Each structure stands twice: as structure tokens, then as C-alpha cells.
Amino acid sequence: MILHTIETGYFKLDGGAMFGVVPKTIWQKINPADEKNLCTWQMRCLLIEDGDQLILIDTGMGDKQSAKFFSYYEPHGEATLIKSIEAKGYSADAVTDVIFTHLHFDHCGGAVKRNGEKLEAAFKNATYWSNEKHWQSAIEPNARERASFLKENFVPLQSDDRVRFIDSHNSPSDKITFTLVNGHTEAQLIPHIQYKEKTLVYVADLIPSVGHVPLPYIMGYDLNALQTLEEKTGFLNTAYAKNYVLYFEHDRLNECCSLKQTEKGIRADEIFALKEWV
Image (tube, rainbow, N blue to C red; front, side):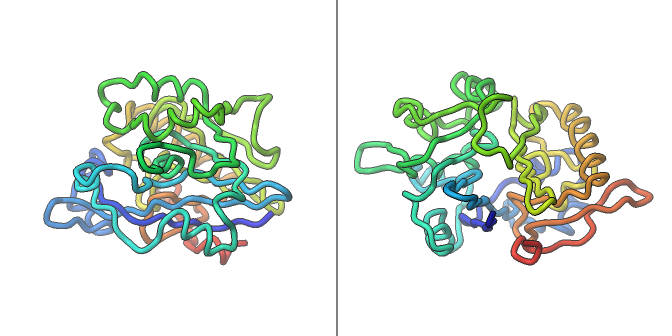
């Protein structure tokens, strides 16, 4: 198995929304905001080569939305999903499977591309994996999440019969297992990758950055902050006990960390790039 960091660029989100009840006087020390109170975040995906499979976890924001839409989030940076995959020596056509942790636009937008007036799969040979309950929540979104679920990012895949749902009998790989969490959004998938007798966890929006490891640091975007708190507590206890490595999707500077126990609770220990770990 070979693991590759795939960076798709940066975007901006409101700092207060990203840190919930934690005051700005604290969070701005680790994530400084601009004059509009926006902080910069990465959209970091993961590419897994395992035998005949080339598996991509999440796809970033993509580039097909309107200028007005992008003005809200200010995407920037030189990296793109396809350029990053090609820089690793692969083509988009080589991707066999795409796993969505969830269907918010910054996690799945790159899965569908615009070809003239037509929307089509960006990875034409891939099977796309989601959770059935989550998929239905995205098709019929609640009012709070409606702006995050953009149907053009995933509905075209269903019409092409490319979507499969992960369950106990159906998975893209026997080396990837999943935890389901429901605090941020309904049935978010947290992939656990078994790599050389170790476990790398793609923590997605359960723990978006190193700064979100402490328990109270929970996004205002989450549907149920108390449920996130419970899920995060359980996950961190297990991750520390089993020596998991956490892989961060949105941390602009830090890719991975190990964990340590402190008098204030579980915290990030060593921070490193994925290539240093593998």
C-alpha cells in the first residue's frame, strides 16, 4: 500500500463558526483571522494505492460553481485536485474508487466536473462510495445544511449508476474500515486505513485541524454539538489507547499527529507530514 497526500487548495471560513463557543481571543492564536474574520483552511484529500485499486478519499471543492458562490469562500492556492493526483504519477482515469466522508461541498465538489453544459463524473472509471442514510439526508436536506449540500456535486453520479453504499457487507477495501458519527452531519464516515500494522484515521470534520483536538473546540456548523462532544471523546480515547495517527483534512499547516495524555486531557503530540510517517 502506498499513501499520498493530495492537496486541492485553500478556502476561507468564518473563525467563529469554526470554533463554536471558544472565544476569538483564544482561537486566533492558532488560526489568525483576516479583516472579515475569515480563517484559511486546507482541503486535503488522501490517495491510496493498493494493488489494482487507486482509492481517493474526498475531492475538495472543485471549480464548477459560480463566481458569486466562490466569493463567499475565497478559494485560492496553486494546488488543484487533478494536478495533485497527476503530480503523484497518476491520471484521473486511473482512480478506481472515491470515498466521500460526507457530501458538504468542500468534501465532494471535485467529484463532478462541467463539460460544456453537461455535468459528468471527474473520475470516469471510479465507483463512488457514500453512506445510504447520509446520501438521503443530502438529497432532502434540512434547512440548516441546505447551503452545504449542492446537488450538482453528487446527483449526476447517481444518474450514471456510479454510487455504492458502504455497509457491513459492502466496502471498497478490506483494509479500510469506517466509524459513523452524527454530530457534524448525519452519518459522516470516518475512514480508518490499516497501513503496515498501524492505523491512519482520516478524521474529516470530526476533528478538522490540530486546533480542534481539545474537546470544547467544536464547530458551530455541527448539527449537534453535544453529540460531537460525545463522539469525539470516545474516538480520542480509542485513538490514544491504540496509537492511531490522525490525518487532518482542513489544517492549513499540519497534516498528521500522534496523541498524548496530559493533565488537561488528550492533546496532539508529534506533528508531521504523511510522507515522514510512511
